[in-house]
Each structure stands twice: as C-alpha cells, then as structure tokens.
Length: 204
Image (tube, rainbow, N blue to C red; front, side, top):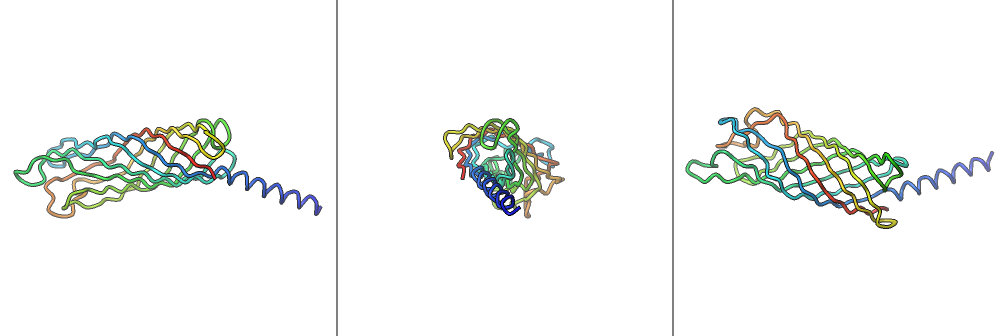
C-alpha cells in the first residue's frame, strides 16, 4: 500500500509539472474595427474608426486541453462626431481609448494545449477613456468570443492567430461620457467590435 501511495504521489507531481509547461504569456498585435454610438440630439450614427491594437494574456493550464486566461487589450481610436465641440468650432473626431480586461479561457479541441485550433472567450469590463476635457471615463460590463490557431515554433515559443468579437453593454440614453457642459450627447444600447490579431506566445 505504501508503494502504491508513493506511486500515486509521483504520478500527481509529474502531471502537475507537465501542466505547468502549458502555462503561457502571449503578446498580441492586431487591428480592431466596428462599434458605434448615436448622437442623442440628431439621431446620426457616430462610428468608431478602425485602428491597431495591442494585448497581453496570461494562460494557466487547467488540464490537458484547457487554460484559464487573463486578458488585457487596448485600442487608441477616434469617434466620428456629428457636432462641433463648441459653437463655431470645426467638427473634430473625439479621441477615445478602448480597453478590455477579461477573465476567461481557451480550449484546444483537436489536441493538447499549445498546438492547433482553439476557441477562446472571457467576461469582464470595458473602459472608455475620451481624450478631451468635458468628457468623462465610462466603465461597462463586456464579453469576448473568438477562435484561433496556435503554431509551435519550438518547445517554448509559438505563434497565435486569432479572430475575436467583443460586446459591451452600454444602456445609455444620452449622457454617456458627459461630465458637465457637453455639447455632444451620446447614447447607445451596446457596442460590438471585431478584431484580427497575431500573438507571440511564451510557454513556461
């Protein structure tokens, strides 16, 4: 019995060590497009411009095919506006930073972690940060879903190719981003964006 117990302990330790090698940190670069709001006064659409993105994820192995993921992604974009920021001023776009912070996971459905196709997703929050005075930051609940393919380049390095979609619940009827004295009144029920990205993944 002692021999059996020792054998089970060794097997558990070996299993844990194997899973530890399937933890990873991934750095991403990509392009995100889509998403928009509505001018509450004129009813015109206010669209987010497509732009480059940067992201980082930490993936921790749960079993042979699944990972728990912490995911942070940021986009610097502009919001096309329908009215000037002040009477008589030119109609300039509103600078806007869009940051997603999500907790979710990856599932490699045709093989072990680190190789082949996978699905990914997460839940968390979106932070909108306008770049002009008179407008305030907004934090809203959001989610992401995506698919990807991981191509090993060696024992500890791999490429990830991903397509993700994001949805942020807004539920605003006209006071979004407004911290007082706003000329532009923005509303939306939700914002949807799509993204393509490539990541360099480091396993440890």
